[in-house]
Amino acid sequence: MPKIIGRKPVLEALQSEVQIEQIYIAKDARGDVIRKIFSLAKKERIKISEVPFQKIDSIAEGKNSQGVVAITSGIKYSSIDQIIHHSKKSTYPLIVILDTIQDPHNVGAILRTAECAGVDGVFITTHNSAPMNETVEKVSAGAVNHLKISKVNNLANTIKILKEENFWIFGSHPDKNSKDYSEVDFKLPVALIVGNEEKGIRKLTADNCDFLVHIPMKGKIQSLNVSVAAGVLLFAISQNRI
Image 1 (cartoon, rainbow, N blue to C red):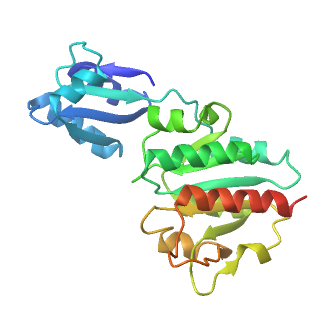
Image 2 (image 1 turned 90 degrees about the vertical axis):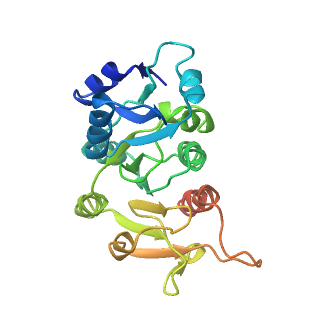
Image 3 (image 1 turned 60 degrees about the vertical axis):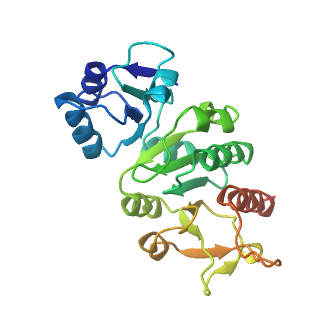
């Protein structure tokens, strides 16, 4: 992933339209520029990690960083409309929504599975989600370069738009009223939502779903890793449509 190195260059990037995924700042970094970086990053909901200077030096590959490095996106993001338009080319459109998934390994694994399953597009929430960094790109095995991906600030509004475009919203959720995924007919335009590693999809998100589905558990552990669950559901949907 491309990098911006140095205090002033990072501040200037924040004040422009550069797509920044994450900012690393040395723990002992101080000063007016640092305060402005924190303020603008918070406003734009960009993740900041305070790390030892040695970590900054490693990320900057020895260049004079002044204790600040920003990771910019090498991904060309799509708009909501672009993904919906693209999906309509499929007999049964399939979109995946990642609701505040925070582990880059999980995001990368889901993107890899989504590409293999023929997903038409992926929506990722901007707030409280993993940055689209080098880890995501590596774990996805290059899927980030083949998928249409959109970052959305307001998931409820995105769901509303999808419903207006005749998508049915399915949420992966172990609710007592949810349906066994194997008993659902997915031969229709589907937007599948998978949620946070610990909390699952948010209550408001679940309330906005048309259906909640779950994967029955036969062991003593009653949950799967989110990337594994996404894989099970995506290929079940693909198999159901044959």
